[in-house]
Length: 261
Image 1 (cartoon, rainbow, N blue to C red):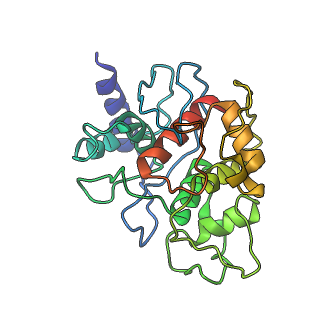
Image 2: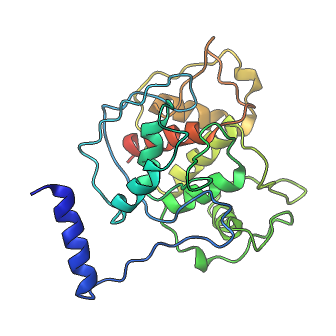
């Protein structure tokens, strides 16, 4: 019998017997960006070193990835409606993160892989990757974070766990497009919070624009590059101040979850 049919039969049987109550949790006022769910840690040496790079390879070896998400088939139905990823280089990465509840579309038929990611969006994704109970956290104490926004409590979680940085003005700028060095810094801090080991798979490379990398992000860039989560752009550049797109973040997260334990 086909595995997917068995999986659907088991899920239906469990629901009918009342053994579990399936829920899909979405943040209120979610701006059509993300879906809620779980943490997943996967080791797979077959994925190419990627993320934050010009490498548009999307050859994901998925056979050894546990399902993890009981709603995977539902998310596959959602992905099938995304008209703007069918021929996009990040399609497989997008499928990976959407199936694991980290993202949803910007509309019923679009994912917007070329749109920029914001700081509030990334913090929300990391919170979902950590499978936190966001209701345990109060609204963010940053003065520019609206307590009614979907990301407010996730930002407070990230603040309490030293994933994000403070400034003297006590602002976070959640709707500001996030830069490449900010992404790397947050993910590096996330790995420390989660006590996840960053394996050293590659020699540390000094980028030609190393002097443009902010001091707070230098260790993070080195660690993530030697792990294989990130690499550079043409000309051995890291381009730390450039923005990063939703498709690129999907690749970074996929690579991270396959490499880091």
